[in-house]
Length: 219
Image (tube, rainbow, N blue to C red):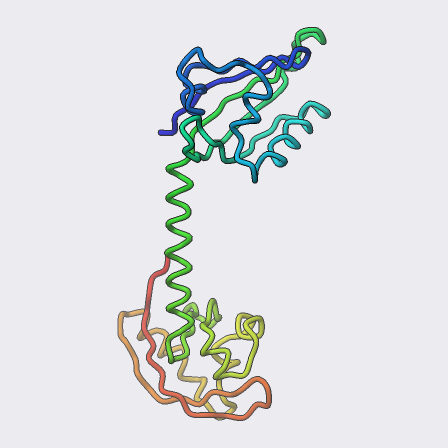
């Protein structure tokens, strides 16, 4: 579970209160956070400062709650990710307006997300650099994804192929009536290898291909 703390800011004095856990998230020992706006801003990652200050200003101006994610630089220099929720309680008087909220350290989640994204990028690189054309389509023939080699082979844009079906890729004399039975065999677990004729989108010229058709489960 994420480390969580609470915080508040007096809108008249701009004095900040952080719970012990909130102080620890920023690298302070409990009771050592000065409680000033400057001390808070000093802990924001330079690339996120404008984003954070604009979000807080928007809440000050409109009274709307906010929920943002951003990076901080702890006292020890470590960069961490946090998620912050804030709101102005409507029941408070004008002289006692407070911005209150919760803070959570989400660094582990962000690192996991970055690892997944990198893994997906690596797989996409491999996907796009194999020599064979690869088509991912569902069992009614709707194209879901293609690699770069498929674009070259069919002289088509990615948008064109993703709007197409297996039948659209096929040459006019291809035995399209066989596709339902072939998809049924694949659904049953068979891997099919066969010769086929496809067409190029640029000029409708046809060419022979060897197809390997198998069922994969994604996600």
